[in-house]
Image (cartoon, rainbow, N blue to C red):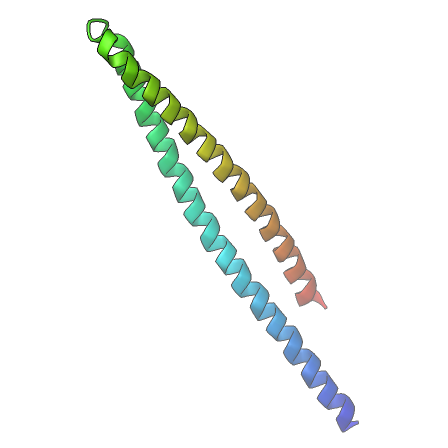
Length: 112
């Protein structure tokens, strides 16, 4: 009977270890996620600023000749930023799916 008790103790310990590991991985992922959300927000702000510049640039027709180069540059920067935002969003989506899987796994572990 003491052999069975020892086995139970070992099982309980490994179960609680894996729950702890899940919790810490989950925390890490949540931190990563929120820093990515901050990145996305910052990029979105940048895109907004660029678009504002484009609008202002469009208004001034006298300086248009010299500003056309700037506009092209801004447009391509804007496109790059949009791409970055899309990539970050996609990455965030993957992270969130992974997080949901972890949470489901964790829930089933706790229910055992």
